[in-house]
Length: 609
Image (cartoon, rainbow, N blue to C red; front, side, top):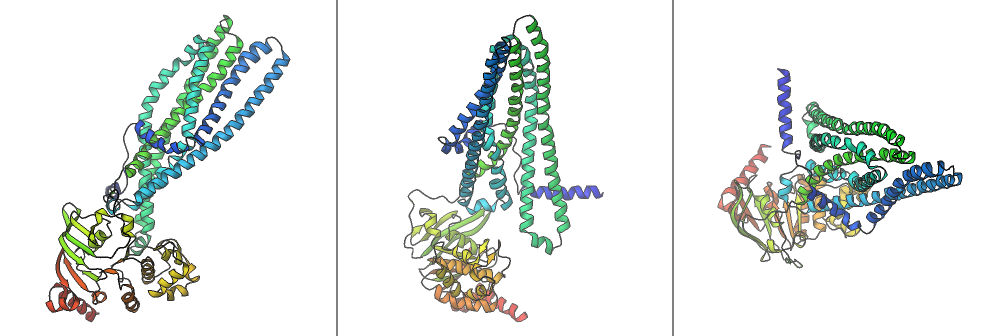
């Protein structure tokens, strides 16, 4: 009974993760996708790639030359004729060739590593830059852990392919073809007898490959789950500890970790079957070589030197076959990762920028919503054909219950989303006809949940305008009242804070976001519940600063705390995506409608406290 309960709990957890991380990809090897991946090598087609190929060819030629010198020249000529001088020259010559081979390999490894690292750098940079430009809808449907896995783990899994795989694949392929040609040139009869085992190995390995491909794809899926849960667990550690869910979280992590362990063990076990198969073929080939080769020597069909060269080349023959089998496994793993990477790269932003779009150079800040309708999902409308007008330099407040559409309006102004119907205009220009950079550079948004980056206080404020001087940063902090608490920190403006600024209180983090937004000197400021985490005393300071700072700018204030919006020029009251009232504070209070009820309910709550 207990086991069944545990199984249900595990299934419930796994069901949750099936929707937050990626699934295994059960697709055959895709050459078209591989060619697309190789496009990232193209920029280095005149530098590292040709240099590595030349070093590879030189090394391959030397390795193929030495067995011929040993068998056909040293044994059949020098030793048979007892020519000591020739033998000495051969020893010196082979030594020089091995030295050249060493030098060629050193440079080959150096150049392929530089090639691989540059390709991985470019691919990761391209992927991250592309993800940065995607619209909010993309992030609404994916966890941060899932995105993190793609940019880090999936790109890292391609590193071995680009640093060694491609060049080694070419080297082994060229070596294998050359050895086959040389074996037939030395003795067609012996070559046919030895390589008769290859078709059998090919049939068995073909069956193995499909099994191996699917197991490594399963490994990638479990690794994605593991990383996604790790990211989620670390991000939500405070919540986990607050609700004393450490044991349950650890049990679930144990299940995910065990799943990854088991999948990797199975994949490794099946992949390991390929090498013994090659060793068996090698052993069979060696037995045939000794038996049939001795017979040919005794019959005078081949010379001893030919047999010796043949033995060298046969020893070299199975190595490339084994590595090509391992390389195929590596390619399958790369395919699973590249499939997931290209899925993101093929993702198009829902917010598209037109060619030759208008560039805002002198925004005034006049905002219009013309019969705007918007839906996050098809069956859930967030805004119902609303129309509103925010004049240049006006302070506008949006009030209403949670889910009434206030933050949706702010998102449409910043063009994080496009309206389903109607149009949003600034200074009479439809935002769909404007470049995103020129639009968003003129808008500052302060959210309730302030994000603080790892770094110093001054760097976090300067994020609003990277080219701002230290004096400008400090002035912005002074204006919003953040300078007082910053000066009390151990290193003032140069105090290091970790991600999300855990050493700071919620109010202090909010003041930093105010300073960051104001430093950007925007034409439009959006405050989305920006004072919700600030105590009453701090709020009074901010209100005093805001009267000066918002003057001349179009300001949109979203607040449940209605005391922060009393002085707004226009207040829009929303309910279920509709504007049901509008006017200034006095007008709406005199009207005694929904706004009046909201104000009265807040006063009653304060009295109760």
